[in-house]
Each structure stands twice: as structure tokens, then as C-alpha cells.
Length: 223
Image (cartoon, rainbow, N blue to C red; front, side, top):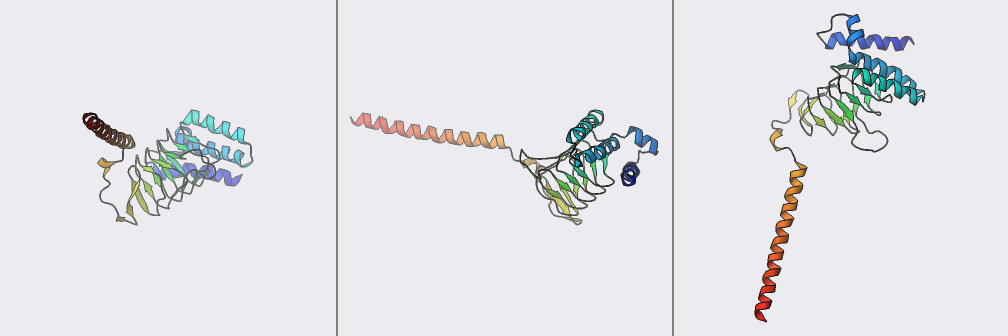
């Protein structure tokens, strides 16, 4: 029980290191939805570990209603986890989050389908995920990694890296630039590619019909 309350205290203390707008502990405890969501999750997760799944789920859904942050009771969250401006945050059931991790509003730590087993991301210690980023699938975001705002990350990110873009690409690793041009204006468009393929097939069919029609006309003339 002492350890549990120590965790709750750390959840408050970390706010002062991350948010310059925080003034005092009472304000943080009463008005910070990110702190409320993490506290609720710690309670829900305790019930979940004891296989009291219904109670755990109810607690998580009540927390979601009041905070706008959805954390599945099964997610494993480390110490000093900070959610800043947390509206729209979603954290899946098999997520594993290390210590000193910070995420911002609109972040999704989700799956890519209906597969079973470990289907959500693992965030190691000291990771930062900026606003609106989507980290999807059973992938690992390495220690001290940063995910840029609005990025969609679908594969592992090494330690000490910065990843941005759609799909996410590593642009900095160990302080060294590894990509200079992300070609954001050349992002793949699967709908346009499908239409191009259909047009190409139609064109081939038209040419084949014209060829067959020409052969038929030649045969008629010969008769």
C-alpha cells in the first residue's frame, strides 16, 4: 500500500518537471485530467491483475468519461508517466510503458487489427510522443526516442532516435541526421494507385477489342 501511494505522489511530482504552467500540488491534483487518468488506471490495473475484469473496465470507462483519456486496464504503465493536455489519448490493452514517459493529446497507442496476443506498442524509458501521433502494432519505441507530432509509426524505433512523418521515418539517431528529405509531398495514395491500375486494364481491354474488331472486319471483307 505504501508503494502504491508513493506512485501516486510521483505522478504529481513529475508534472512540475514537465509543465511550466503547474503552480502547486493542490491545483495539479484537482485539475489535471492526465493525472486523474493515470491514477484511475493504477486502480483499474490492480483489479485487472486480480482478474476482476468487469470492475476494472467500469473504472476505466468512468475515467474515460470524465477525462477524455482511454487507458485499457490491462496496459502496463511504469513510474512518473505524464499525459499532457490528454484529450483523445488511447492506450491499448497490451501496451507496455516504461518510466519517465511523456505523451500529449490525441496520441494513440493502438493495434493494427484483430490479431491476438501482444498487439500494442512497447514504449521504453524516457520516450516522448508528441500530439496526434499514432503508434500502432506490436512494435518497440526505444529509450530516449521521440515521436513527432502527427506521425504514424508502424515499425520499431531505435534508442536515442527521432521519428517523424507518415509512415514514420527515423530522421535523427544518436544526435546525427540520417534523413534529409522525407518527401512529404510524395506520400503514397492507395486509392489513386488502384484507379491508375484500373485505367491501365481498361486501356488494354479497349486495345484488345479494337484488335479483335479489326480482325473480324478483315475476315468479313475476305468473304
